[in-house]
Length: 178
Image (cartoon, rainbow, N blue to C red; front, side, top):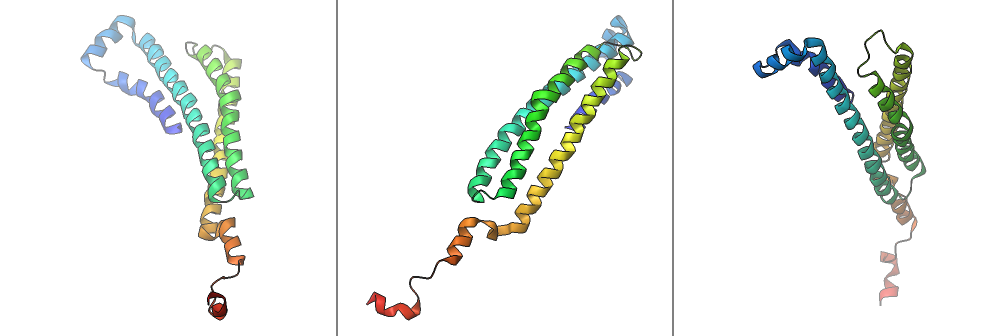
């Protein structure tokens, strides 16, 4: 997601460095600075849209993955805790942090660099906290993946119980069959 945010933001400068002939005419009409404001606003709106729906996707996928994990690992506590923690982090981002980033960001979209300085600081605090939680989520996912790799095929509780059962048709029990 960070790549998408950076790409959309930098696309404004790339577009205006060597604009197409059709775009050059419009840029001349409204002025370079006004065109930058509008294009930056468009890039910011795209970023907000992508963040919002990426988080929704992660929540749905996380719940689905948690259900699959529940049945495939017979409810392994560590794996389930890590999966639930990842969904909780995304839900926290989606319900508390992202709405504030969107709200403050929309207020800053048309402000110049010397305006709304206190709001910019609050925005960057939320933004940094958001990406800090992304790192936490990445660490939880890495821990979950490592646990899944380490446990391999023998991590399932069902398989462990099957190993504890006695064999019914043992060679020494031939008198049972007849």
